[in-house]
Length: 371
Figure 1 (cartoon, rainbow, N blue to C red):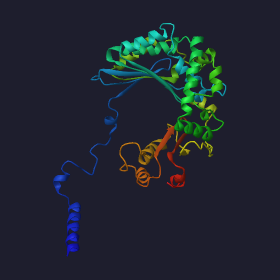
Figure 2 (cartoon, rainbow, N blue to C red):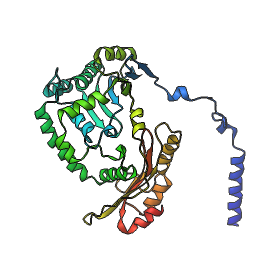
Figure 3 (tube, rainbow, N blue to C red):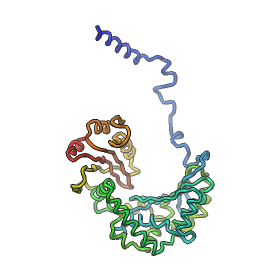
Figure 4 (cartoon, rainbow, N blue to C red):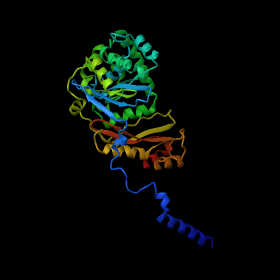
């Protein structure tokens, strides 16, 4: 009898699903009410202006905000170096804050601190970025500082020597970060014998021999107007930013050579291969399995971004436990196959890397690779 009542209850529920109460459909429809979501996704609007020298200015205004971020994104990174100069782009990132013809290093620090701002930079394989965060009243000051360090840096010899030691210590720290080491080795074997396979920091021997001439040559060759985008968001007005950029960024080369043209001369070739490093002092095995991904402009790049989100990530030390949205993350967590895992998707101009990185006990490696 109990099973009959249960069957009737289930049947009743199913009938309700097939013929739902119309009140639940009042505010919903199986048919989209908008033919395009572009105007929603593009809010706030991104305004772009290209100056005669090729320099581009892009802004997104949120006038209700009291703060803003402004930065210079440069189409130049370690990929555009040679074996002899590998490490120059990152070295330059360090040196760019060490004083200009207008400001000493100390004055630069004090000016940023006095306006409660934040000045930072980073270097990747294909881009270098310098950016500042400031209050709305100090946006023009921040823009002036960025223009000054990019066009008037002095690169004093004693500061170059001092920065060598800083970078060499940084390299030692990075060598202790297993994840960073693995992804460097992944690039070196996947894109072997191509510029994309080199590390961002460069070899220690290069760091010891980089000179002022190397830094200046890299700036003159790669820090050109057509390869720069000045972007600002927050409490900014597009026309005002464009006017300031015209006044401040006057010394940039207008060489029309683009990063894409340079990449065509030395394209990255993906090579299926493997590299292993054995260290018996490390209790866990860390590994990455990657396939050739898509470039930024490849239509498949969007699909790979979605796939990365679907695969997700999981860590035993993070929140969420075993109840994660990703089925892969759930399987890893419930079965305790790994200590952590994450899907990654890296895009470059002409290629990419897509795969999974995981940390696991050695005896469980076979289960990780089966997933």
